[in-house]
Length: 289
Image (tube, rainbow, N blue to C red; front, side, top):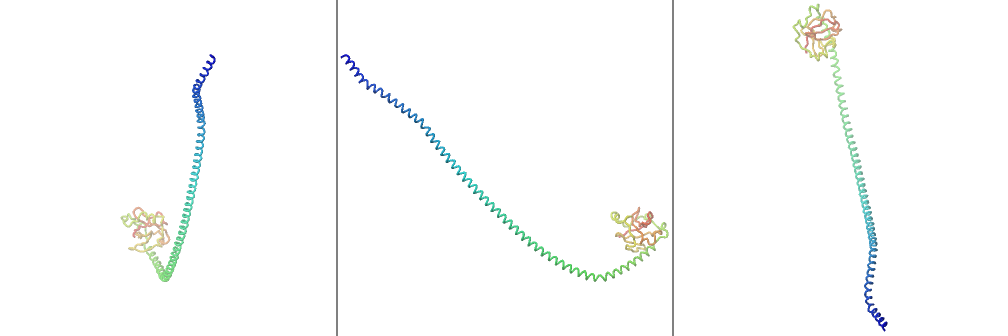
């Protein structure tokens, strides 16, 4: 009986304690399940980010590809636009070059036409001038021929008169010089100092050195001649020279034809010297225009 009681008691304790233990074990089981769920969720969470990252990477790659495509499209569009602009510029430059070439060609043609017109006008003017000159020359020739015919008779008459005058002048000069010869020149000659000094016209020094002096000699016979106050006078170098002294008796009778003489200024006045008698006194002469 006692054993039955103990067994009964144990059974009752088990019966009553089982729910308690069941209730006590059930929360623990729930906690474990909860922990397992959380762990699984943690694992899922740990596994989820790589997937999102992959998706993000894919999305970024897609975006990058899209950006690259857009960039390439923009580059192609820019290149096409640049090519079009370059082509347009080239066409515009070609058009400008063509226009310039056309203008240059037209300008060259215009210049050629103008030059041709100018040349034609010049040729016409030249021809007109030549005709006018030819006519003038013909008229001049006719006038000269007429004048020549008229002057031939005059010239013949003048030649005759000139020859006659020359012969007459030669006779006059010959007679004048022969009548003006000294018998004794040393006694008949008077220097300008003895005559009181030269007070007549003086030849400028520059002109005198160019036409007078010992290096500029001449012959009297071929020069214009006349008598002045009974003294022989001849013209040379634009001036008249009058012989105041008789020529020396030792000069030849025809010295004025054969001897070279010269005019020089010595000491106090002008003198005529004969080169055939160097160192001998000269004839005192006066000068006038």
